[in-house]
Length: 238
Ligand SMILES: Nc1ncnc2c1ncn2[C@@H]1O[C@H](COP(=O)(O)OP(=O)(O)OP(=O)(O)O)[C@@H](O)[C@H]1O
Image (cartoon, rainbow, N blue to C red; front, side, top):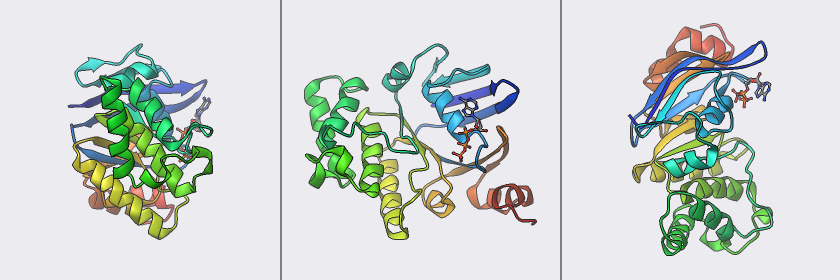
């Protein structure tokens, strides 16, 4: 397994936001995470990417225990991530934003890093704004840049946090097609998303969180048909 999360727990005082979570992701697999606001989805990403330390439990990635490894070490190990609110360096160009990720990630040489940035900008449809300041981009372009920056680090696993939120239907469809293309390159994907139809176009497996606990997991359509998922996630009685 590429990622193995076992017995993961995180509490802030008396609030438990990750409660005995187990999760595995194989290389090249795409897994979706849904759950109501405050279910602990972003907290799980922060625990995997190293922004938060767990209160208990283990996270193994690519055969190594991540305990004590800071975020930059996890990035170099092959974990890339996006943020729900895009966080580019506003005063750097799009290309420079990627280069920062590329030289601090898993790329071996500067030449390789520069070449990879060009390829990723092309793949993500951002070549035309390569020299624009990141602060001048539209929301869709910012979301694309957020993914491009994660890919620049040459991740084995990319964590996508609500990448489709706030987009029009057409923009969302474009972004989903791009994520499908990223998937085909063999990068594993763990994707938190409220826009369920976007998720369903890409993922193999769906996980549902509620109050920090995993309440369902399996084939996406089967999971969504479960009465408890309907009630908790969509807020209606089955
Ligand atoms: N640093 C913190 N200190 C205290 N409580 C926190 C902290 N970070 C998160 N929480 C709480 O943990 C819970 C889970 O938050 P989290 O952001 O992981 O939820 P989420 O499922 O990603 O929600 P959303 O869909 O709204 O993004 C929330 O109740 C939140 O207020």
